Image (cartoon, rainbow, N blue to C red):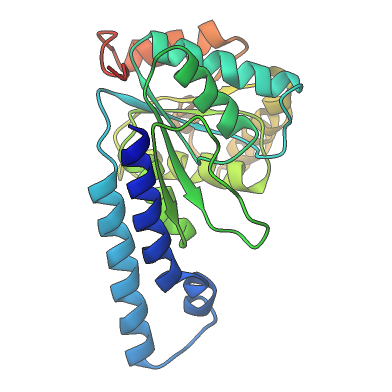
Amino acid sequence: MDSEKKRAKADDGSLLAKVAGTEKIFLTGRRSREADLESAVRIFLEFLRGFESLEIPGPCVTVFGSARFCEDHPYYQLARQLGSALARSGYSVMTGGGPGIMEAANRGAREAGGFSIGCNIQLPMEQKPNPYLDRFIEFEHFFVRKVMLVKYSSAFVLMPGGFGTLDELFEVTTLIQTQKLESFPIVCLGGEYWQRLQSFIRETLLTEGTIGKPDMDLIMSADTVEGAIERIKQCVPCEGKGGNRS
């Protein structure tokens, strides 16, 4: 497994060197058709690399959350417990591959003998892959990375996070709302952290008619790891084998 990870890292390095900075260039506005065609080819190759790299055993759960929580933070510990519980229940655990909540969930999965995956992103302030990954791949384009985090999972757990986490929450919710994605469970875990957002959705979005009443059921909440696992199992049964590394 170590040699496999080293080869993957080497391959990623050579490929990423060719696409570094291309997302910012691509999003700068109108360019020549030739330049956009070149970007399209690079994006396709990045998708292809993701498809070839991510072979995941059994059902997979993606955990989203902030990179800013340290090891001694209660949310880090909660995510670590979540990763462990998911692995013991037979799910592979996928995250954005970085520090904070992502590291904690991958760490818990690895410690419980589960399969741990990371889809990392190149950032100006370098975000290194955390050390608890059985398999990881690095991306230049945020939207390619988000496709991978969604494509291979059958459930999503949202831990406390910032703009990126909220973006992931609402993108997955929109995909399910518009029937572009199966009605997979979306579980917000973190207690009080999500209460004001849930109030905003209920008291503003629903009251103003910008969402419908059935949309309120798309996002579930859980106060405990056990509650989150139970909600996932109700929608995505698992035999307890898929996430095992052996």
